[in-house]
Length: 82
Image (cartoon, rainbow, N blue to C red; front, side, top):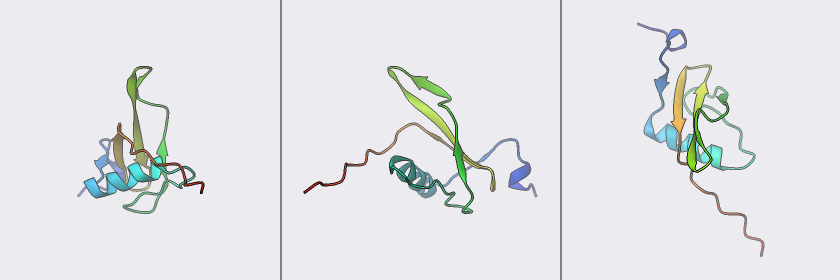
């Protein structure tokens, strides 16, 4: 069977892991860690969009070979300053 790291086509993250990654990205200062293998997640410049079109990023784990295309990020509320 193929080793995920030797694949040219990345494996997808599960829906639960994808949501966890979106939450990490939307949290200022959060470390991006792969929920599958605890490896470092990397992103680059947007692969599409910009201007009036929502940006699209690819998030990839170099350790396990999984990736995710992120278009819609949840918005975090600013901390309550009471």
